[in-house]
Structure formats: C-alpha cells, structure tokens
Amino acid sequence: MALFDVLMPVKNGEAFLSQALASVQAQTERDWRLLVLDHGSTDRTAEIVSRAAAQDARIELHSFPQAPGLSGLLNEGLGLVEAPYLMRMDADDECLPERMALTHAAFERDAEVVLVGGQSVMIDAEGKEIGALSHPTDKDELARCALFRNVFAHPTISLRSQAVWDRGVRYGQSMFRGTDPQADIEVPNLAEDYLLFSELALQRQGINLPQNVLRYRFHSGSVSRQKYWDQLQMSGRISRHLGGLLARWSGQAAFDPVPFCSHGQALIDVKGRRDYADDYARMVHALARSGPAWSGEAAERELRWRRTFVDRHPLGLASRALRFGLGGRADPWEMRTAMNALKQQIRGRARLQMEPVAG
Image 1: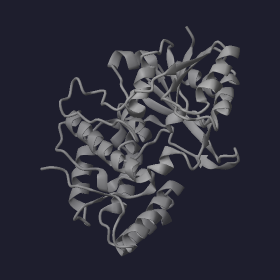
Image 2 (image 1 turned 60 degrees about the vertical axis):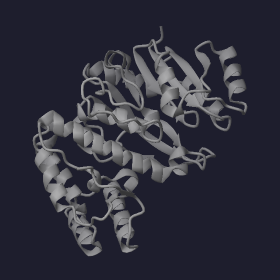
Image 3 (image 1 turned 90 degrees about the vertical axis):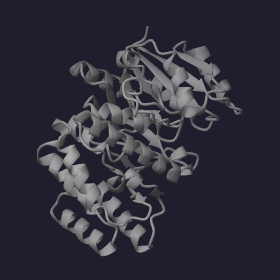
Image 4 (image 1 turned 180 degrees about the vertical axis):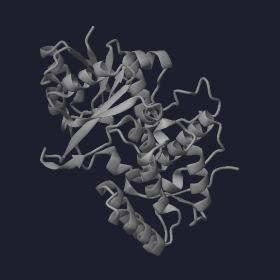
C-alpha cells in the first residue's frame, strides 16, 4: 500500500498529460500510486498513460467511459483508494516537487485536519507563469469564507482517506445526506469540489498550506473558462445549502447568503431585488451563533466586507467599497470583486441572477 493514492481524471487530455504525469513522478516523496481515470478519451490519452505505466508500475490506467459527469468519475476513483491519503491532480496541471512531502507533514501535525490544499502558480498553455492563485490558510478564516466562495483550488487538495471512508464521502452529494433530510443537494459537475470542501471547511477541518504546491494551467479548454457562468450559478446553490447547514446546526432561522457571495469575483442578484438589508441582518444574527469561527475581530471584519453588497445602487455600493478599502482592510480579491460588482450595476443588470428562496 502506498502513502498517497493520486486521482487524476482525464478526457482527451493528450495536450498536457505527459507533463502532468512527469510532475507526479518528480515528487520528493516516492511512496505513491497514480490512478488515471479515463472518461472515454478518443485521443492519445490511453496510449500516453499506458506507455508511462509500462515504465513505472506506480501508474495505473482505469477506464470509466460511462461515468455520469466528473462527480461520477471521481466517485469511481474513490472506490479504488487504499492509501492513507488521497491526492487530487488534474491532467493539465503540474505538481511542484515538494507537494506530497509538505502535505504529509501537514496531516501529521494536526490529526483533526481532513483536507489540505495549497497555493498555486498560474501558467498558460505554453507553461509561462501568468499569475498566482492565493487562498486563506487559517481554519477559522476558511470556515468563514467558504460560505461565500470556494477557498480551495481543487487540483491542490488532498484528503485523509479514513475520514472519506467513515463518512461515506461522495463527490456531488452532501456528506450529511444520511443524517439531515434537507441536505439533499445534487451537484453532478461544475462545482462538486466546492460542495465537498466547504462542508469540511465549515467544520474547521480544512487548511491551505502557505506554499505553492502546483502549477495551475489556465487555457481555452479549461472548464472554468468554458462554463464560467453555469459554474457560478451552481456555486450559489451550494452557498444556500451551506447557509442552511449552519442555520440548522445552531438552531437559527434560515438565511440567504447568495446576495453577499463573491464566486468568481462576481455578484449574484436575486431576481426582482436590489436591497438586501433585511437579508444581511438575518445572516449576521444566525452567523453570530454558528460557532467559534464567527466570533472576534476577524469575523467582524468579514461581515463588514459583506455589508458592502447590502444594495445594488451604484453610488452606495461604490461608497461602501471605497470606505472599506480606504480603511486598509481590503485585499486584492475583494477590490476586484467590488469593481466587478460596480460594473455590473452600472450596466443596469447583473448577468448572474437566481430565483428567491422558496417560502
């Protein structure tokens, strides 16, 4: 049995697959098994993996052409996992050499951690560095931010396998589906990672390493570029699900976090609404009773930031964002979100809208 089982889903990934495989082989931690999950590729994907497997017995090719979506494909992979740790990897990215070693050390330091992610360098199709993806590292900050946006980069994460087995974790389904009748959300694709990782973050069981662990490739074939708005719509549904969990856990009235989310640095409007002051008040009341992550100065700061979006009138939105920024409290992600929100409202209508919560 290896220390890490690596799940790499792929469909027609010949363009960057060799680099991805080589980056796993270059890990300083040598005790691993790479499970390539082929989703019915019609290009040279199977040939590339088979050739690599013939030279390195730690690489295995598994074909699941009929798996329903990415969630279904990854769930097939979960059934193959035997190692203590499960690492995710995409077929167009590149691991940095210390990724496994750093991740293993993080799990060893804290037995309560179930999920470990990290930071990423962004690269283009040619491998040129074009930016960075930065995510919070602290458990409490992750628990707060996860309600409003995905704070883990899927291809950087690893999971403690025993927790996956004990909780019956499946991609695309809530891990609380067996104990909470209202946790009935289904996410077959687009944001299945946000659902799983954020449920762990709400329980303060996830961290991000401060180090870069991945070269994240951003190119025209990326799902995040092809289906951007559909992905944000699904993320809004998941945020409502997460808000429901928090409300039920603390015995509070339901609230809608959607107007205050910043998925993809964009705002979501609720159809027919521009003023969300009452929604904000209900949210603040519920979150104040939702556990240790929502007490203290850092929690107050997060809620002050979210208050920026209590209405969609451009002048008011701009004024609140400016005050928050001038106070030295805004980070680049937040300021870009504010600028995007202002552009949306000046145009007169947000591109992303959701129906009001039923009832």
